Length: 462
Ligand code: UDX
Image (tube, rainbow, N blue to C red; front, side):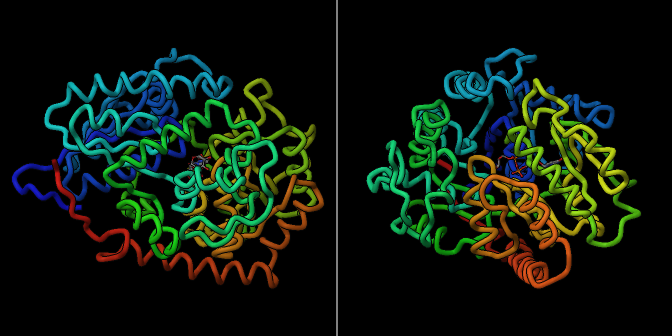
């Protein structure tokens, strides 16, 4: 991206959505833009800020998480705003209240902050915020919408009215036949839609957020998306005919966050477990930062893991079932796994996936995890739980064929069988390994000089 005014660096305020899967790519985007000569004021919520400092102590003793990046010459300032809830409030347990605060309170705090920052040209904000276009117009600056999921998910929300008019969304007896009328989208089954578009109750706070956020996104000056043009060519081309839409991913390849603490939980070191294991012998298991499992499904997955006889490293967040049930594994699970298994609350995933001992990833298909897994050429076993993960599964399993799915509710026999297919040599694994190598090359090519994610986009600073 190149400024059209030569004398002064363009200055953007970048507001990160206060969830782990959004903060990480937002930091990566800030680093990428600053390395291209922009001045950035990065905004976290106070709650994310405190959680980051707590998780990364004692390695971080600076209040300003970008201090190190600034010392290396990048012009990134750091600010925090309240999301309107007390610091100790359990945002995971009281999810609707958390979402309501984001819906009704946060924008006033961002506006107050923005009015106090000199010489701002542009607001870059996560597409899921419900106020950025309105706020940017009030401030007389541009709005750039930042989409952290694939273009396919963006286009489904963007065309919500089309889905509603065709009876695939928004009624109690939605059509269950193929969806073949979304511009730039090959046909999809209703079960491939984001979970919120499969819900029958469409009056929840999350639905209010989606309606409002996408009416704001339609008024954005342009959209930056953490995907790769070559992976979603027809969807991106169709979007580009309605609005400037740029694929700039995968952001972790053009901006290392190693100097910026982004993790919201302390990372366990897993090298003592992985180092002695043979190449490609360990299944990495994680369901990300946000989704929950029922106790029944967790039990079936745990028993399937034991039955598979494969070594595994399992990230099990203490709230994966509920904050009220921090130890949900079946009795005797850890003892039965012995030195074949390690369970940790959180890890440095990017490092784990790179480890030569890791040979497969049982994943919820969070978009960051999908891109990281492709980059590390680790075939996926997909078990989507929520939100965009069903759409991401579709891309992984059916479009790019770099993973296979556990279809329907997990059952121990099915989980064990699928783990065997992904981890143990044979036709299925060989096919996945070949395809994931080809797909990784698309990621590599996107970020070389002149690659599709690196081409400079000219824009006018108003
Ligand atoms: C959420 C949604 O669930 C996801 O579908 C959406 O695409 C982004 O927002 P999350 O569930 O956290 O994200 O999944 P994901 O997108 O995979 O992001 C998780 C991030 O946390 C990844 O960058 C991953 O490397 C990191 N992580 C995860 C760790 O660093 N350590 C862990 O132990 C687990």
